[in-house]
Length: 325
Image (tube, one colour):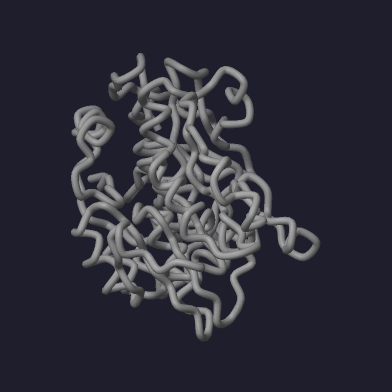
């Protein structure tokens, strides 16, 4: 390899990014060199990182597995890279893999960090793996049971995936809620009901909130039934969010519970680790219906402009995919 082996996307200041040359370390006998094929933008978290909105208290906890630099900037951040192993142990060479790595054309990581894609999984769809892993953890945290009435508020990538998972549990009635009527197309492809915020059914057994808005969280508290659980999957970064706990919150004996992917849900932790959970997510991605969530694509060279656009005017984007030449 030449002295400069790769190019990577760096956030250089809040709201600004650029592509930089990278020199890869010499791979050891237990390392692999991966050539990127696709990466996905995790629009909620990556937007907050791009805008410099990671609170100082969370700088360490919010580090991605192969992050370089420090918050707020300059920082190389991301965790949805799909590529092909160019060099490494014989059983991995030529295999297509998912890695929790930032947006970069080629990279070197320990072989233990790669997750081989199932043969049935197209690499372009595999960019959803990290978001699906998050959704799996959220469903576990919510403890959705057969026959439950489930409201999922916020039809971004994670919200759509939560609704899809819950809709596969026998007897569950799932409503996917969003202010954008275009999300009805995704809901239909995923086999769940779409409703606008003014039409959500009351008395939900489980509510999952993923809209990232105060109004969405207020709606979640409103539609939850007696002794229901509201699972908060939004991450607000440095923003302050008002919560109307002075209304029926206490009378309905509601539980407001956080969910975050960094730790396996407590209900599963004795039997599952992160690697088993990721393998499960990759197997689930065999369903071609999930292609509906990848609503736009651009080439790597345009990533600085695309990231700025998504952070300011996401429009109808659910998941945006980056394609490498």
